[in-house]
Image (cartoon, one colour):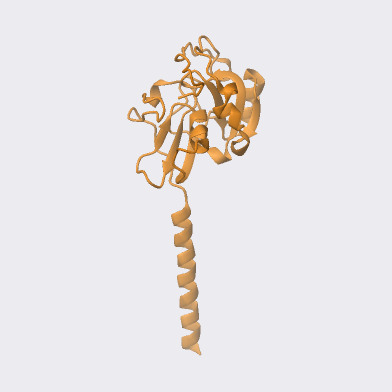
Length: 199
């Protein structure tokens, strides 16, 4: 009887260990720090040199993250049929913790699916296009929208036409737009590409 109980206890312990291993295997990998070696997937430029929120997508099929010069570009990556679908994690700059618009930070990442995004604001992304500005704190997103225009939506509710359609056309220059929470950044964006898609 005692032997049976010991075997049953051992079997339960193995089963629990297996469940824990499975949970560990399914846990998304952590975000990586953005450095000068981070090159934008669409623009081919150094991501650190651009203002506004950035993003990284971690794929099962690739060791290094796929970097983006804007959060909106990362969302477009998930929508485009030609892009890989083996996504393990999507991280975007947490603008609630950013110093300012010009310096969004290199380590303050938030899981894109947990973030609140401000769309339709007057602030332009790293390459001068419309941006989906991410925040870990919904209250901070609402404050940003009150100061800079736009509305707050969840990741799943960012409209496809805002990311890929005509409403996402780039305007060319950011000029003297105020930075995060009204601080001027003085940055000028790149000229708009003819296809209307931000890179």
